[in-house]
Image (cartoon, rainbow, N blue to C red; front, side, top):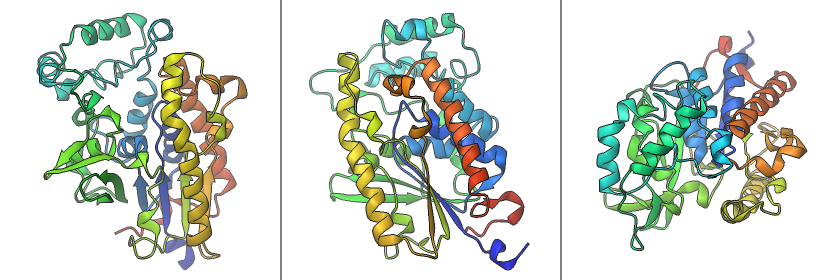
Length: 350
């Protein structure tokens, strides 16, 4: 091993995007299988959860946790009648919280204990639908968001392990009071910070932390580049930066299939251009001959005939996207093997 290889420092940027996040989960699973490692990980939006399943899952291996996420879709037979993922999006309010604590406490939450535990039988999804339907809710015209703040987090992520995990890890959320983007490192991250990083407006009410209100950082900056920018973060010396972006692809812009699809598109459409502009600006201002920026084109690997379904929460879509992401990342690792860092090379992260 040469001295150059020993000091090689690599970073990973995980962008936002929810229903098509199994593309990122599959890519991360491939990195694990190929034994690619990163010294710094910076995540936003759904990429935050994918990054934590990759680095600090509560149960099982990171590979198993990522695959469980791909198994979180709703059975196709149900999704065709009701295109909503009631497994992920829970009813809000104190009454709903009490109901979940009785029938699905965080340690045994069905997201990772039952419905994501490997059983794909439609009857299991029907059971979850019944439980969700029976849940009370305080939702009203005065509510600040449609859904509860990811009550499954404590059943999915080992928050006690984040501070001690190997790579440096950063997440972002936007502070509405200070009107500035806030970035938390691994020594600060707890469940409340992750909930803030996932609080997309209208879907979720702002998350309050120490009297300040936060919304999802990816709603404004889909790619959390700040840790790699001189003057903003301490990792501007990264030699190779890998970007997993699933929002900056114009193939996401299409005619909707129905009203629900149109509503999803209304959230995604502005983020496509935001993501594209962020990547272009970073390449223009913060890359140099000494730094390689590699973008893993995940959406480009999705078959054309499947594009209208990439934002679905159906079992078939989420599992297909996981496989697409896995294969694309496997090819990517082989193509860029000289620039990536592998397990046997050792880490230089602080």
